[in-house]
Each structure stands twice: as C-alpha cells, then as structure tokens.
Image 1 (cartoon, rainbow, N blue to C red):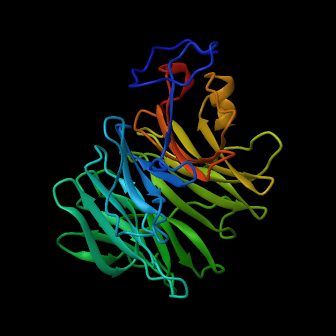
Image 2: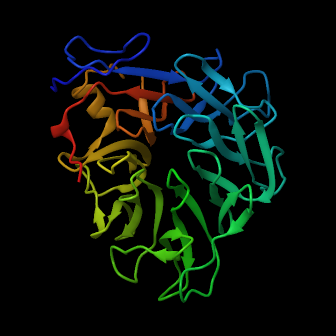
Length: 361
C-alpha cells in the first residue's frame, strides 16, 4: 500500500478503510435515470472537465448527446439537439470541446459532421463530412477524419493532411494533436510494401511521416495520442494478429507489455504530459477492460489497481475502458458497467504523489 501526499478532492471520497491515500471515484451521467447510459471519452489537462456522450431519459433518439461534466457544475448537455453526437476531445482548461454529429434516423447512411463547442460561442457545426477526435488548447486546431486525415483551423477550414511519402492510396484518420496544434498523429492507409494502416506523425514542415513498425513493413498500426511535451506518442500495433499497446519515442517503438494471462488485444488511448503514465483498454474473454502503465511498474489492470492499491470499492462496477488522463496522471476517465445500469461514465482522482511510482524519462 502506498503512503503518498494527499491530492485534494472535492465532495465524498469512495474508499475502503485500509486505504491511506485519498481517492475520489465519480459515476457520471444518467441525468437522474438509473437506466440511462453514458461514456466518457476525454478529460482536460487540469483534470477538472470530463466530456463524452449520455442518454437523455424520455427521448427516443437522444442517445450519445454530448456532455460536459465538472465537480462544481455536474453534468451539462452541450446541445440537446446533437443526438448521437458524443464529445471526443477537450482543451487543457475545458474551454473548448470537439466531437462528431452522427446520423439520427435508422436506415439512413452514416453522415458524420464535426462540431466544436466553446463557453462563449456555444456549438459550431461544420459542413465537412468528417469526425473530430482532437483539439488544441486554444481551440484553433481540430483534427479528425473519415476517409482521410484532416486538420481544421479558422483560417483554412478542413484541410487534408495528404499522404505519406511514396504512398499511392488515400485513407485514414487523425486522432491526437499537440496542445499548441503543431504536431498531429493518427493512422493513414499505406499500399507499400503491402496494404495496411500505418501510424504517422505530421507537421507543416515535414508533412506526414510514418512511425516505426513492430515488424518492419509487415504490420498495421495507429497512433491515438501524443504527450503534451511532444516526446511520446501512444497507440497500437498488430503482432501475431493481436493489437499490442505501444509507445513511440526518439528511440523508436516500444511494447508496453502483456497483462497476466495474456497476450490480449491491447490499445493505448491516452498519455499524460511527459509520457510517464499511459491508459487504455485490453480485451479479455471477449470483454474490454482498462489498463494503466508506467515505466517502473509496467502494465496493470486498472480496476485491480484501484481496489488493491487504493482501496476503492468497485464491487458494483465492471470497468470496461480508460479513455483519458490528466496532465499530471492523477485523473483518469472512462466507461464501465454496473449490474442494474447501462454503461456509465466515470472519473477517478488518484491520491498518489510518489515520484518513485513513475519514471519521468
């Protein structure tokens, strides 16, 4: 059991008596209806704002309505009319949010359009057929894609990021963007040496450049997020037909490892400011579960970590995925399932402040 400096939290803390570190676990969503589902997809760098999608009781089409949650204000819908339109990304201070508006009628082909929300302007809808997955801190850059990776700025609108050198085919999506918007990561279709998706890093100076493979020239991979210091990119790469969580640094590509009983399909989805803590999902017995990784202790099941190391009572929960992490690595968000409920978004604020727990390389 750790003994660490306490991280101040607001409101009631969910803890077992044996825990020595203060931890807060919040169930998010439902809007007062125990059977309404929700999912969290991102958290602001300061850990205070969570975004995602939630059902709205009494509204047949109101699933996946984008929400913004804070400790002080609770859950607030961005726009009740944005049905099937979850928020996927949030700026560092929670002032800007981006997401995707989907088709709302059965039988209609999927038509996805990006949107942006800000405190001053509310919701801005875009008329470009694309999804939005990342946003810069000042809201001036949004990244995403549908059939191709795109970048949006107020000056340029939606601009195709192009193709990797020597690649004849198009396709892919941008998923992560540096806080200042200068670097974008994602996956793009490659037809050399064989058809597959390749992880890429993009800047205006270099254009789209492929990242290293686990098996050079013979695997598919994709990048999902980049650390705020720009030194670590995370994502997944296929090895022996299984997705394996990886990180890219100046030294190349590195496997995050396997969990006990593995290997499983594992996908890294979010990384803290300096790349020292990574979270994501892995698949076990056809069900997804969340993981946490750091350089010293490796990869662990997050639910087991919360219950055994921090004493959090999760007896009524099956955590299914960790999707976002704060800059300091103390706040993690995701989604899970409770026996009497649908999927429910959650946020956990960890109480640790132990330099030995992570390796700030």
